[in-house]
Length: 249
Image 1: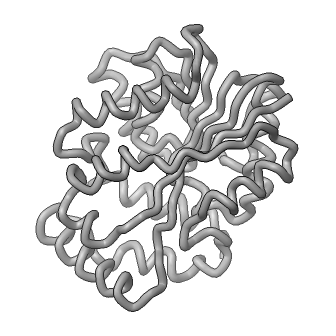
Image 2 (image 1 turned 90 degrees about the vertical axis):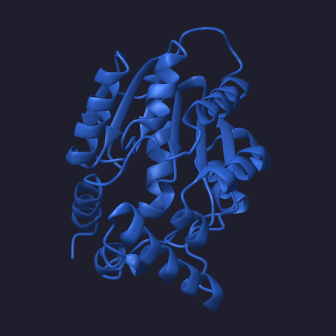
């Protein structure tokens, strides 16, 4: 079974109900995220940035609003349609492209920064993915990865995910069985299906030669998300969010 075909099919389907406006207070969310990104980038220069697994363009559009030259890439063409629609609504220019996160269509050292959010768990070969993301970062640039633990196998969390999907079906018109029907076929081929922790990512960063590796536990963001995400999300998730940063020299 082709893992990436299943991943692509799921997110093509999921795009029908997936929105960029995932917070109750979108303006406050944007302010928090922009502050976080600005503190991570630590420069007033306009940079060339790649958002891998851009989805509906959440990070890409925030970075474009901040004045950066942004490219977003995703395996799902349907998600990219959403990202382009969002960019048009916001009157922003972002180069959204279809492509494979493990085989990027860019030359070595193309971008000042490569970012991704909640992506690593979908990668069949996480080491190859991180190596590829590092490859396209310029010398002196940064790789920024935002992730967490998503699919805790404890009985309590399995029950919470089931209840969360039922609530999503009633309140958000999500098919509660869709995720399971797609990912049950391939989850054993996704090393980080259950999510990742800072030590996992720091190890990957070190293996591909990144230096000055640091981790931000994102406590303020997690507190905000707990108050501002949907009821179904809060029932089904208790992620240990973090941001890992590595520099390329």
